[in-house]
Length: 85
Image (cartoon, rainbow, N blue to C red; front, side, top):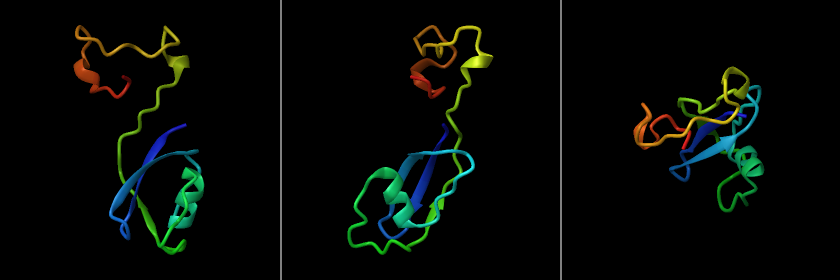
């Protein structure tokens, strides 16, 4: 499942959420439900914004090796830049 970043302007925080590509969270209450958070003092109807970010999804069927490649010093994505570390 892909991960998405959501911004809650009321709290000024960004949350990373994993959900189906078909789903889209639109309010703080939905975001809290997915994350298992208590909404606290923020109204559940408060809008949240899905941020544009690069997805880190690798389909193992397209890889010759079903495991993700390592991000070692000799790889082209040194330091985990590829997001697979």
